Image (cartoon, rainbow over all chains, first blue to last red; front, side, top):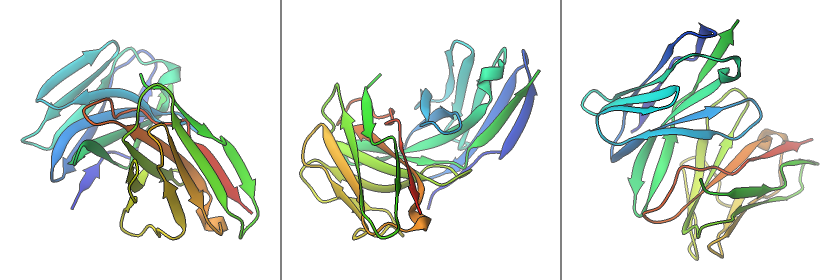
Length: 112
Length: 115
């Protein structure tokens, strides 16, 4: 089976750094994706890790450890607009394309 | 990134009616389409996977006779919710994919409210 866990909610302060963790147990692993989702909107792609290590993209970074089944999303210099749900998704190779299985999502509230 | 559209963006219907949702990949050929739904304050749940020209594969617990998926072309897939009931009210989102290509972009979603 597949199991993907994230904290349900987090709170952080504007200008600070926050780390959102994701642990997973899955078969056929083919990459770890992070998405941002604002209320009432579809998810927006943030990052993709398939190899171990840190991927940096502006204020956002994502880390993966395949041996530990662990990933985190790091958000720096938090802004109010970063208040959203952050979804961790595991790519599960099913033939020619990736089936994405989502975690429960972490609702991040950025406070002034 | 890939350009994906969904229509309608929002629909309200009476219980017992059928609703068709269209998903179009505007700048690439989608050999595979993934359909998700999301209930309030929950994460995305994969409903089904369809390959162009083939029957869809449904996830456990999703009724294939209720959620009809057609993927007749490489740029268009449709999801029809048949005989919709209030419990089908949800946010339906598509994700087109092509072999060896980008697979991470979603459509903007369709919010369905069944009265």
